[in-house]
Structure formats: structure tokens, C-alpha cells
Length: 236
Image (cartoon, rainbow, N blue to C red; front, side, top):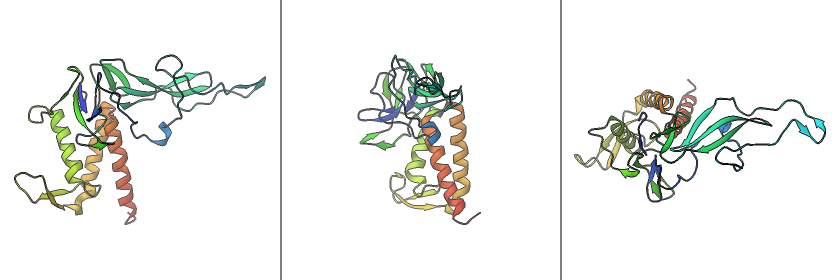
């Protein structure tokens, strides 16, 4: 799931993470509270100048402007949407931008003919399901895990979320219908689940560092919450 023009995006019938000509993905990637500013509409184009001039109220000087973010901070909200920290008269504020047609968001910046996954294959949301979109072809595509390592990783993530993490952590699924493997019957290996869940967390953290993928950020947040809860159950 490294940088690739093919990525999963939210569509009218399908939920995927990278499309330039399809419908705009509804909703917003889950973010830490610090990255959830209240944003106003952009007055001129995608860059919104946020807040008011906090330095002056009438004729009274109120001191230097306050800052809500660190200049240079940027992240992907979706396959073609990003959030960035910018200077305003009131101080540094977050602004949102939708990338131009034919571009997507990678590592918080708009890149031509590139994008990063905003959802996990097979994920469902509001009646939609996540599917793969080819940005170059501007069409939905069938994943090819046998020939594409990116798609193999996506297919593994889909299986892991569906069958291997029934309790929030990584386990070893057993099936009632081999060789079809469509009906999970048991989940083994839970004694070592914290180890492999931590390994999965490390993998998603590396994917987030490499791509800025909103989906990777979502997985990191969920896995950190799971491990935090587990560590506090026995108190170690």
C-alpha cells in the first residue's frame, strides 16, 4: 500500500479511496482531536482563511496572534483532500484543500497521478463498500493480488479485518468450509494476540509514514486504542 495511482475510495455504490472523476468521498477521515478544527467555508477557492483577527477588538490591542497549529503540518483527509497549517491575520490556522482533477493526496500534499488509500477493501459505510479506483484510467478496477504487491497487501488487510480480527486484535481464523474459506468458525492464537496486534500496528504506522494514507491513520488509531485497553486490563 505504498504510493500508487490505484487506491481504494467512497463512491455512490462503492466505497474506495482514490478517484478523480468519481463522486466526492462523503464524510471525513477520523482524526485526533488536535486535528479537528472548526473550519469555515473558503472565501476564494479551496484555501480557507480561518478565524478573525484576534489582535484587535475595536481600538484595543489584544496582543500577538495565537496559533492553532505548527506551520508545515499537513495530512490527507481523503484520497484527494488534505488539511494544512497556514498563516492568517489571526495566527496559524488549519485550512482544507481539494486536489485538482487528476491529482490525489500523498503524504499531505496534492500529487499528480498519485493518491493514497482512504479506506480498507471490503469496508462498508452508509450502504457503500470500499473498492479500488484507478486514478490514471479514471475507473474502478479489480484488485490483482497475484501480480501486484500493493493489491496483495490490500487483499490481506481485507481478510485480516474481516476474519482475523473478530475481537479487535489479530488472531488465527479457522473455517468450517475449506477450501472455500468463507465461513469462519473459530479464532485461535489469542494468547499471542497482543504480539501480532502490535506487529500489525507497526506495519500500519510505517504505511502512514510512507504514504500519509487516511486509512492507515484510521488503523493506527484503532490499534492503539485496542492495545491501550489490553495493557490496562492486567495493569502491565
